[in-house]
Image (cartoon, rainbow over all chains, first blue to last red):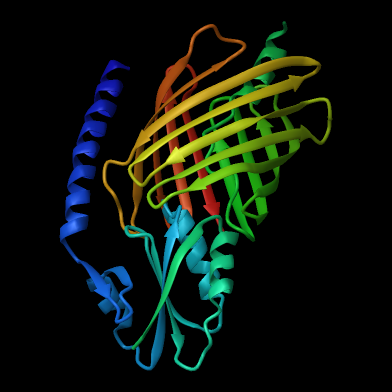
Length: 134
Length: 200
């Protein structure tokens, strides 16, 4: 049992060191802070966003910041919910940054409160929602 | 106290390796559990993220007896932050065959993508005798997987019930990918515990 405790301690220390490194990476790589003309800012993973919009055109992208999305199961619930929505063309869940990206057709009026309610029904909180046109 | 009574009680007290007791709205969860004294299958449905209703079927390997119980779990409190989630649940269960066999208790957890801590305190009535069980669990994810990857956790669990004077501490490994999860625990006393879960 002593060996198990030692292993657990070792993995914890490694994880702790790794989590510090994660934070530094998180700040310096793949992260862009977009500034809109009205002065508002939006933190997104630019590489992920570029990949998401590949092949899409004439769309609106809703970028939702979600609190409490800490595991795959939480994220999966959100993804399933929006994939059932016939007006959503594409859905992507960015677990690392707590973002959900949903592509809608340009002519659709996005129901902001509906999106927030769906996320709440899943057990998480939508704290911010921004819409970009592409 | 007869040996059969004691083993049945241990069956009830060996309350498995609890995963999330409530799912997201409209989701179902199927769990199977096996150790040296029982096999069980537990299905629960969550109409909302605030509660779940389920039935559990147990095969008591020692008494060679089957029984079933109805279970109800309610989310009392949840705190979401950007990188963590904290939950407090009320949980209860009642036997279909013998309604005076029942349990209730609270369960809590706090987790980030890297760290996990949880506890459970449960009071059980079995044939008019009251017992308690409690456990604490701490875990760490050795790496942070992306959405859809295989996620792994290394955990330490300490449990104690009214039968025992000492805490029993043992390692638990948890892996999940997609809708499936598997937990494996090992202690010298109970040998291997295996818990499989599928959410849909």
